[in-house]
Amino acid sequence: VWRHIASGAGFFDPWIWERERITPQGSMGGSMALPQQAERRSMKHLGSRTLETERLVMRAFVPEDTGAMFRNWASDPEVTKFLTWPTHQSEEVTAQVVASWVEQNDNPTFYQWAIVWKETMEPVGSISVVHWKEYISEAEVGYCIGRPWWHRGVMTECFSEVIRFLFLEVGANRITAQHDVNNPHSGMVMKKCGLLHEGIQRQAGINNQGICDMSVYGILRRDFEAKETGA
Image 1 (cartoon, helix red, strand yellow):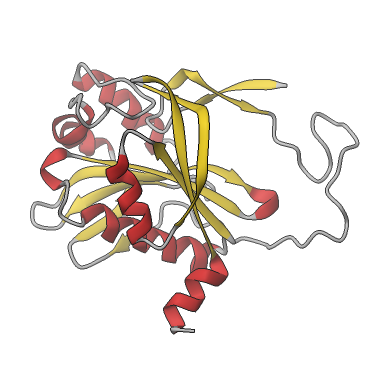
Image 2: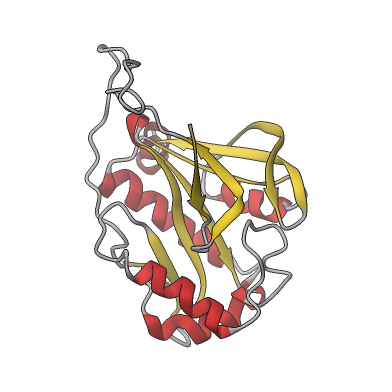
């Protein structure tokens, strides 16, 4: 069974489809189940709780973020080049997207942060959990940021804090991220945040450049904890 899902920007993207999730009780009332002996970690979903680093605040979006989002990243075709959603052509489009996120702010399973630059206290990008695999406690994270903040360590600082939050406060066991192989700078962020390159999936993704090979990265909670303790 296939169902249409929203892209990371809040659009219903005709390029992205997801197979119906198989739960331990089965899919669509079926009998397929996970093995009883399979270990399952319980998670405590907290939603887009405010996080802070030296230069950044990550918080839930509010309607007043529309102008900054449109101006700082959503209207820039260089930012959206390798993303799955089209460049915004007007603030009205951005307003609709932000409104769809604001509606979900009280949902504890919804993780969509505005990346706020403390110097100006306005959003300069976004980071989100774009997909959960609850049955293995896995979160897939996606992000984007405006060009003036590229190559300044901003996304590494942001993603590192989100990783800490998802592992230590939410209770995730695995965090993944992926990028078009033609966008290696995104992979550099993943490596700096401790994710390991797990391989390339050929023609497994599609974005504003068309069908593409995807470079996949991941980190386990045990790896994160070992790094934090120096073990």
